[in-house]
Length: 226
Image: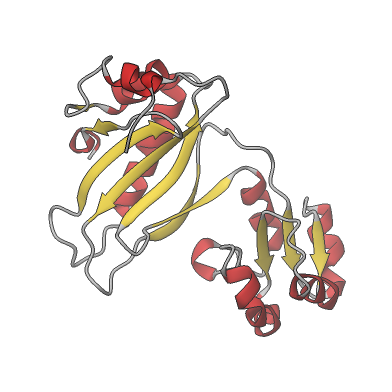
């Protein structure tokens, strides 16, 4: 793949084969930034997982960088006011199930009470494709909708390994102080390490890299954060 001159100029500023500690790697990502818009900083963590193993959870980054998310709560109509008072953008039962069936997706996160999942599960073709299906593992299927909304509005974010065993996740913006991005990265690496399957190999974390959305990747010496 042919790269532009600005990208190639960024590569000349550091050793692309070297690994750096988290603080240095995040500082480098800022130094390598060359486009005019505020890029997202992305972390890529390659894991060694068995066929039946997966890693998936949620966390709240200490330093937020995204706009407040619109939360839809699927709940019995009598609990809709509770959800709306807690900060949900939308809440209800049949009305919103029908809207989503019709293709309406004007929300960022969906939460459901357990008693609604029989009906919400039928929206799998719509919600599943967009990664919006409520799931107990991510705290989005719960009777405690007030706490769930509070956590989500504080920026609770899901991370998960894809089919190739790699976690791809946004951890900041290049406009942020590098130490704040590094703090987010350190927390995420700690959480991924904590979620290591009991029977995973010792080389569970194979590699870690950080980059801006348009810039070159910087290898992270993740062992220093273990």
